[in-house]
Figure (tube, rainbow, N blue to C red):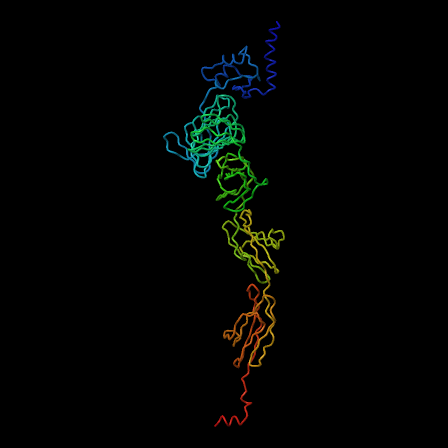
Length: 547
């Protein structure tokens, strides 16, 4: 009687304890190579074996392994162990979740064709990415692979282990690079493997990068662990990398270079082409920089390798992105990632400034501004400030319809910049600021009355201040078409020696130290009389002259 009570209560007690470990129908994986399934209310051993097991294994094997006394009375919530090697292997597919640039797939004897986002790839397919191109695959277990530009790999095996959610995936990377995030899979069967011409990389759940060329292969592990095998096995832990040359075993793992320093608050770019830099990293012989879609790490948009700590790309639409940068050591091992937000706001592009030009001098009591008319601009914003930081604004015109504006300004040094505004009200970035100097027009010098005497005709005017000079003209007509004297001088006077009799006109203007000439002042007029010196000759002299 006691044994019967124990037999009846034992399944109930086990079910009660197991129910606390997880809901019915949940799956997990044990560390000893078994997959653990949680019994649901309607489950039977026969049904489960038909769903998950491959021949020659059956429900009796499950009963024996799990020591189930009554196969007809499974306890909901209890654990059912299934060895990974018993699980049915079904052909799986890989989904293309993102394509950037020119990529190709070759399937058997079929001609190559472009890879399409959303299509399913299968074992045997060969994938190629062109320059500047990339693609991302998602496998049945959720693992992801990102192939970077100029890469080629073959999908050798795509298997799904029953309905366990586990997968058995193997790839052959012939050249290029792939970034991989593998869903954890413990045990001896199943898993994820990348083979290269030099070394084979096996994992059970990790994040790593693999690079291959005919002469060598490299692996960099970010999380988890990778087993690199070529003659002997080397285990590479997170934060380490290894290089394997052709025909040689992998080198001992060494620590990856630390992540470069990027601004924590992100980078904003307002110019095309894109130019951005960061602080040089110790031990780096180069850098790899990538731009990915914000919040979508599977979408690689730009990828570049650079010798200097700076990236240069031709274009990128306005938007918010993720910038990822890592240092590269002398053997080509890429270090830890540094990431920050990248915001591109370069459109609508600002106009080109026309006047005033850079460091121009503007004379008068107002400055005239002019600029080009971009096709995308419906309006313009003009700012004029006393300082280069545009904190002390003289003007902030936000809705100028025409590419010109005039602003009254006192003498001084100013800065100005422009932005375009599209028809929908979107303002683009300001263009490069220009500086100019506003100056007063040099006043005309005050002229003194002309003087005739001692055989000279003398004109005088107000003396010059430091650095000034004068343009002076003397003519026989008021329109100054019959010029008899014209010169630039630093003196405040000019003299005509023995001028013929007649009427003369003079005008003068001030020239500032930069060579800018102000307006001519009022015209001075003077008559040089006809000489009567012969009236002073004595009569006796006239008689002598007459003989």
